[in-house]
Image (cartoon, rainbow, N blue to C red; front, side, top):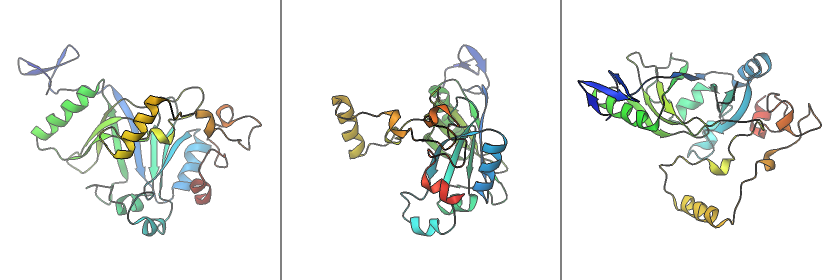
Length: 243
């Protein structure tokens, strides 16, 4: 827990009633029955870009059962440099995969998020909520997006996220390669092997490997629609099939 002075917490030199300070509203997650229709609205209508899809069924023991329910991808969309501003997913599949936690069925806001200024503030928030018996869904580091987090519930069951360290996407329009998607807490044998290989220089990650042609341009997708088009070749086949 952060240092206390006269009953208040020192948060970056400012004394506050809680050991963290909300800097800004971050992103929203929405449970939707038809992700394809929502992607059309947010991408074609509002101009958001797809940063990453995440297939919640890919490594799930009930993969085949989940696939029968519809599109199993979560879609991470951005409007600026933050990796995602909006996340869309099929709520029925999300809950069937066991990722919905205790969110009531009538709550379609998957999460609403709040950015703090340091990892220490996230850690202090966990202690703060636990000391007050506030339910927390999970704590860790999310991929894709790379943000450290804790997820407390409000009294009505809405899930909040206190987070820090969101991945930034630059002028190339390319997110981290999937080979770099590891949560930090995980210590699998494969992860250690990957780290040793990276340290030796025997493997490399090249962003150019993900640049494929977009039907809207004769150049690479990094310089055209940047994944904004539903027909863009940078979108995985699972997305194309769903639309």
